[in-house]
Amino acid sequence: MHGFSEENERLAQQILDYALDRMKLDPVPLDGPKTYDELWQAVGETITASGIGGERALQLFDDVLSRACISVDHPRNLSFIPAAPTEESTLFDLVVGASSVYGGSWLEGSGAVFAENQALRWLSDLAGFPSEAGGVFAQGGTLGNLSALVTARHAANERRGSRPQRWVVACSADAHSSVEHAARVMDIDILRVPSDELGRLTGADLEAALVGRDADDVFAVLATGGTTNYGVVDDLAGIAQVCRDRQLWMHVDGAYGLAGLAAPSVRALFAGIEHADSFIVDPHKWLFAPFDACALVYRDPELARATHTQHAGYLEALVGGEWNPSDYAVHLSRRARGLPFWFSLAANGTAAYETAVEQTLTVAGQAEDLIAALPFVELVRPRQLSVLVFRRIGWTPQEYQDWSESLLKAHFAFVMPSRHGEETVARFAIVNPRTSREDIAAILETMA
Ligand SMILES: Cc1ncc(COP(=O)(O)O)c(C=O)c1O
Image (cartoon, rainbow, N blue to C red; front, side, top):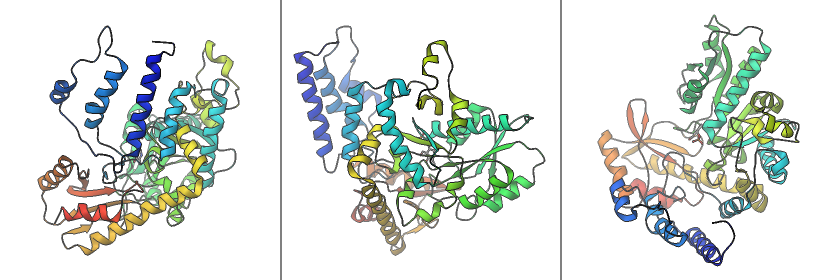
């Protein structure tokens, strides 16, 4: 099992061939879920005392298991927030796996951490953060939001003499479900401020909600830079002003939308982010990296270090290292998960990222025009980024469900219905530069 054998040599070739073949597929097959019984029938038990051999396990993955997983990078996969890793990022993911890098400390992973930090710097500069800003690639947006809020609460505990019975974080009605999760984990409450008619949290509404409270229990505001369901950006400048006036931590959840900072056509929507205390953006969403990576950046990383550094006898040797990524989020051991993103950014250059994000925005604009031109569909809210929410006039929830299932069953497209209030609606999330106007038109045609 340890020690490179001739058999490993053969297996390496097969695995590289598989990876190359998968990358060359154009388009990739959409594939789809199978039932447990179907998978059991096809695969059976794979864990045995003597092992089934790498070749057989790879064959099962290629023939059955991988085909029971929906391809997130299919150009007509527009559900949830899909992904579209670049060739370079996918290839480098293989390298990261083969390199046995520990990405938690500078001592063990300085080269990797140096490169990851350059990628974080690009994002930090796009947001207009100061040169001392920094952070870490955490596992995902959920963990990034949690880590930022834990830092914000720690800072509030340190700054304010007295503590309320329960701390409160304010956010909009449209903020991502991970905020609820973070609040449960942290045992804090949420102040949900109603969104305006566009789905945004505004500074004025935030101020009105805070003025009405007698307790000084709000420690942070979580603003959203691109809501998941609608792709709408909160009034970051207005929120920043309220946070400055009231000395509240401003965190921007841009897990999906902050990739828009790379695109000149929508950058102005994020005005005000430069005043935030922290933000997240997931390269595995709209920045063309493989799962799973969330860039978490703090204006003052020292506050995060004071919050998240773990202390133990065996770890003391690491204290004071140049930059220990484990000090900036809820984690210790970590894969250097920012490296595929860094490699692609270094190889392609930032201009290619601008072009790719703009391409998806162009197609989102074309989708908007197509929807406006068709008599049987209509947008439920104006589009800001690359998410479109629209209704098929006259359809019942069941009709949306049947339509969505039939598209997937035919391996044609993956478009899950969503909700707009109580109403079932359709939703496109376009983050793949390979998605074309023709793809969108073909999907809309199936709703006629
Ligand atoms: C705005 C926003 N925040 C947070 C998350 C959670 O990110 P993750 O799935 O990487 O945990 C998402 C996921 O879609 C999101 O859209």
